[in-house]
Amino acid sequence: MPSQIRSVAVFCGSRPGHDPAHDAAARALGAGLAAAGMRLIYGGGGVGLMGAVAAGALAAGGTVLGVIPAFLLHAERAHLTATELEVTPSMHTRKTRMFEMADAFVTLSGGLGTLDETVEILTWRQLGLHDKPVVILDINGWARPFVALVEALIAQGFVAEQHRQLFAVAPDVPAALAVLRAAPLAEPAVPAARL
Image (cartoon, rainbow, N blue to C red):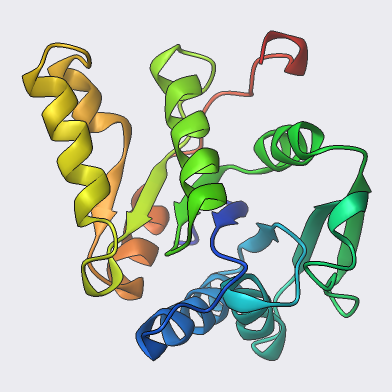
């Protein structure tokens, strides 16, 4: 039975990182989403892990929507062969559009921008603005410091214990895809004006 998840927003780095395992995981995730019939929504760049996840999906015959702010068209080398490329006026608009169109979210390895997108989508879920699945891929331990930070915040009383359930951690791409296939489709998102 096909998953109810139709579109997945992937947050990931505009750099490839030092370990080639990150690039391989990005390509495998793109290909896996395509094979599952899930549209990839991502930051629209053609560099780093962004370019790799899009390339993986396109090579496997998938549908790819890139969402990129106008000021990053050159720096992130917009992926002009994506199925569709949407240019936004700002970073905030980019994140809002990705949120509106996605049924679920996957965080791949990345830097500060990737963490920003991940924390924001988790915060919105904590506040009840959505109940879409969030999966964090822990490729070669990339996510361990983030998970440890969340645990430290829980231990110090700044995050409720039940908020561990805001996200799932997957050790590899097959595990992440399994979470997405098993996840029910969330209720429609709240109006963007509340974000």
